[in-house]
Length: 81
Image (tube, rainbow, N blue to C red; front, side, top):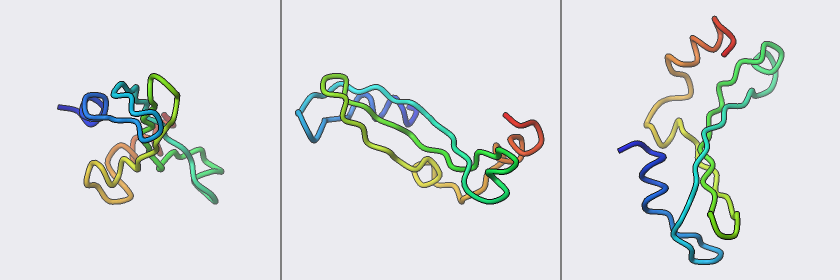
């Protein structure tokens, strides 16, 4: 089961108690050279309540058990995804 599916099935909103959620992966550049060259090494999972819109943000590098740099980052550097 993917991380997204797990969050969508197990989520319970801490604000309103709703059990429905939507997820979205986002990648962002940091500061310095990564910002200058638009290298998006910061990857996050946004989990939003389908009732009230409350959103929690999770670091995908931690959730996926990776370090701060993975193979996808190399493709991002080379091809500018």
